[in-house]
Amino acid sequence: MEIVDIMLYGAYLLVIVAALGAIVLPLISALSNPKSLLKSALGVLVIGVVYLISWGISGDEVTAKYIKFDITSTSSQVIGGVLITTYLLMGIAVVSIVYSEIAKIIR
Image (cartoon, rainbow, N blue to C red; front, top):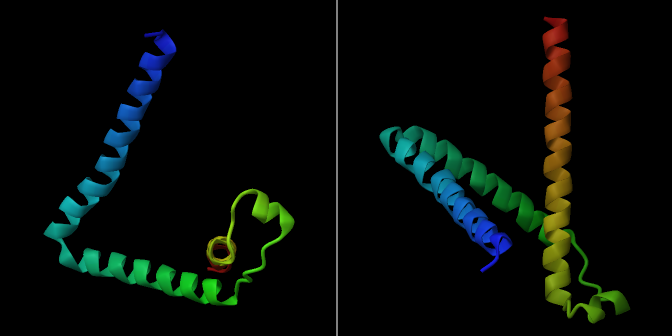
């Protein structure tokens, strides 16, 4: 076994540990404060609704390039929905940052 293989397995292990920590530790702290869990669930629900709207308005066209990568009309619509959701959430984040900075300046 080469050193690169050992390092890759070590990196895989660290990613798994970090992912488990990122999922489990907030759940443990949320169980001590159930209201924060409700707020998180509301946030996930809002993102889900934004995705469903984005999925509904995304196209399902399949071009020759898509066929080369075995992308069907369903997966094309899912990908379009994810992209539109990403663009919307990024736009909302930028607008909220600009708004908060302008509100700080005015106060």
